[in-house]
Each structure stands twice: as C-alpha cells, then as structure tokens.
Length: 282
Image (cartoon, rainbow, N blue to C red; front, side):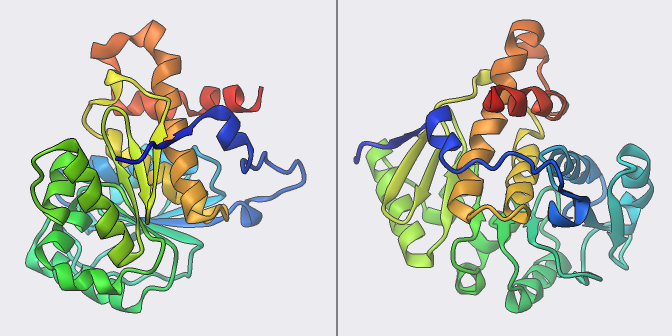
C-alpha cells in the first residue's frame, strides 16, 4: 500500500479560509440537506445543524412531511421544504439552486425513494456529498454511479464501503479496490473508521484527528453536514473532504477530557465545532 499523506493542522491551514469580517449570509453559501424518513428525522436534524454550525450562511432541509415540525422546532435557523409524502422521500423538488447538496442520512431505501434519488442524480449539476442510504441505494443500482458528478464526495462506513466495492480479504485489498472505484467513477471516498482515510483517485490521505468517542450513532450524519457546508462555502471537493474529517475529529479530541468516550454523542460533535474552529485559527 502507498504511504498516505497525513491530514494535519499545517496541511489544513494551507487552504483554510478564515471568515471575512465584511461577509454576509449570502456570501457564506446556501446548502441543501436531503435527509430523513419516519423514525429517522434525527439524522436530518444532526446533518442540518452540523452544516449550519460549520459556517454555512443558509441551510434548507428537504425531508418527508413527518419531519416538518421536528426540524422547525429543533433548528429554527434552518429552512424546511417537504416532500408530498408523509413518511419518506418520493420526489425531490428544490425551490432553489444551492451551492452544495448533502443527501442520504436516514432516507431509507423505499422503492419510491430509490426512484427519487435516480431522478435527482439524472438532473443534478450541484456539488454533492453522498452518505448512508444514498450509498446503499447506489450499491444496489451500480449503473447509477455513472450519473454521479465528478469529484462527488462519498462518505461510507465500512459496511457501506463493502456494499459498494465488494468484500476484501486484507487491508491492502480494501485500499486497492477503493482506489480502483475512486478512479473509475472519479469520486472522492471518505473511508470512515479509526483512522479515517480519504481516497482521491490514486492519492491516499490519513486523518490525524479523532478518537473512539466518534463511534456513536449520528456521528456520520454530522460529518455529512460539515462536508456539505464546506462545499457550499466554495471549497474544492478534495479540500472540503479533508477539512471536514479534520474538524469532525477535532471536536472529539477537544471534548474527550470532559466527556469521556462513553458519554460523547453526535450532538457533542456539533456543540464542540466552535472550539474546533478556534483551535484551528489559533
């Protein structure tokens, strides 16, 4: 296996853009998060809040009708657009063209949702982060990967990665298969794990932040929101992925002395984003 490049603070600061003191919300990017289904609206909440808390100027969440009140009450700063269906997504219609879209957390794999994803991919030209059930649907319908725009960011956990690239018998085979997949479809793959790696065509990057506290429900949903936020703020996809995993991991490193491994939850990632940005800037 090739030696990976390390994602360190020094590396991040080469392309990190501190906030312009004269900016306004319209310049900070508008992101759309497409997420949630009945019983999994929490995934939409976590991804949307993480997106907003990572510096995005505006966030609109597209979710089934059952998520409307939950989102409006739990994150008043986020705008909400709903599907015509109550319990799951059936037809993705956005009243705006955002700078970036994150899709997949908690959407489920209903046939109507699969069809909605297909129709969305067929017409979408916006920079994209794909996660969770969006990846599971693509794994079931591999020909649809041809519709995914170049430099789209995929964020699979190990099981989702296996569904996409097939089983592997060793770490080196896993990397070989992931590199080949990234090359074939021209996508950036965030291999979530300990540590997290980013595969971009023939390059391998290893993240240096994060710890076992991140092994908790909803952790990946927040990462999707963070990466989508950076895409919306105009970062190149390869930089959005690197900055996303670095900041995400840093929140757990900052919180660990107080929270401990056991009681750290995904909401704590969001709570510690401010401190992570301050640490990056100091």
